[in-house]
Length: 626
Image (cartoon, rainbow, N blue to C red; front, side):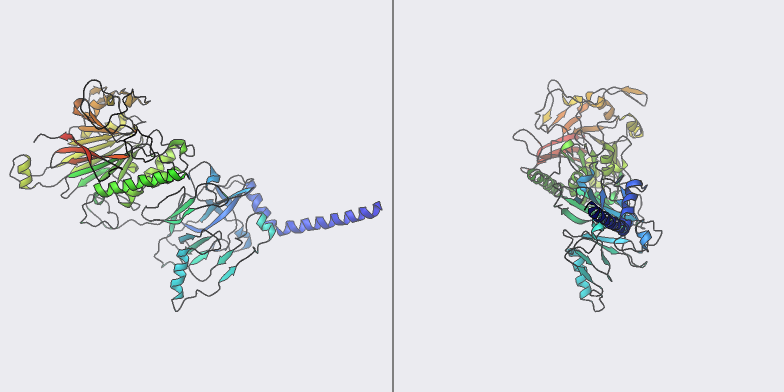
């Protein structure tokens, strides 16, 4: 009896051994691929931009050494994967997301893996054939995106359309073998494939449109970005949302929005004293954007603005303290939408030439995706083509990203003066008013009756409150004595914001306790030697450049202007965020400044969200003697 059972056991063991060898043979490619990703460390970095010729969602298993780049096959082998051997040696780069918690932007999460978006890049010199020029992503892999359906509908109406040629729809259960499903290299269970047209299905609901020949003038995609959170809006030129707020069913986290950027080429037109103006800005518009020096991506490359027409005034909108979180909390989402609508309304009413944000865009550790929050905040300015400068505050940090990443993201946004900031983060915007004054204007101003040129210079400092200003100010020492109008903006209030005795004040001054600030400049501990003279007061230093006022943020319950020595006004921007804690009776507000060279004055006023159409606390910051 024992011999009989032993024979059966040996027979079953042989059968199992043969089956194991057979299964190992069938899944040899999958095992090789997983071993390659687990043992090797690919040198290819994550995708931060560049032309691409393939895209798909790939699984990164927990036993892989890293997820930044993976070896994986192409679902539909093309020029770089012509045979089976090459197909399993394609190196993919994950679309980068500058936050440290990787699973937060995965598309799917399993017991042993996370799925991310990967692209295949290739260096193309001169030729764009086979590059991806458009991407569309469906919310359900069994459905076709609306953009693809619209293009197919156009082809159906064409007499030479091949839209019904070689179409395959595989529904129901997956046709992929189970051993491939285990290692995650199969296509979706519901797979729609289209051949013969520009749109090609890449699995996981991703559709791509390719540049089919070298005569195709459509620009290729040169960047993809991922954003987390609700109410995201893409407003940058040459960018477009691929999918908006995709909710991942098996991941209880923030929705994903994906945007793409098309290649932009430098304009060949030449204009005096400036680079080509942005596309679509007519010469007839009296708009500051006409005079900015920008590159093909609308990034500002010079801090100097020269007026060459009739405009002799310059309006600045100061906004501060938003504390955006961009979480999935419904009240937070509503309040942030209210804040953005408030900003939109202010821009329509005032049409400023420059927007300055003095800190606390983010809400420190409560903010999940800093990029979504910043994009939400600057979207009104980008949509209205208004340049802006940002000085970061104490809450502008994240435990998911470094301070350098936050600054780099702001610097690369369109119309951002941060692109021309100093190494320490300081910005100086110089505005030159130049034109011949009319006889009537001159008569009103100084009694002269002859035509003459009357150039004026305005200088606006935007300081980083956390870095020293000595070297930065010394670079502008040649402008001392040449500035007619000056204003300074920074996040922290100065020690002089707590004056003693009686002093002029306009607005609400609710926080009067001693300043508890760690920066030496805000404490008043400043020591500089400029042009042989030694100074220990920061206000005395600013007075060298004829600064008429300093405006800050940080304190939510102060929105006043008070006058300090040198007749310099020290102002607060208030707080603009609808979700910001403040005392009863105060509403989200902004402050405006207007420099008028004709009237020889600087004025300031405020607007708030409770009565946004009304101006209040109108005052003179500077009034020339005429």
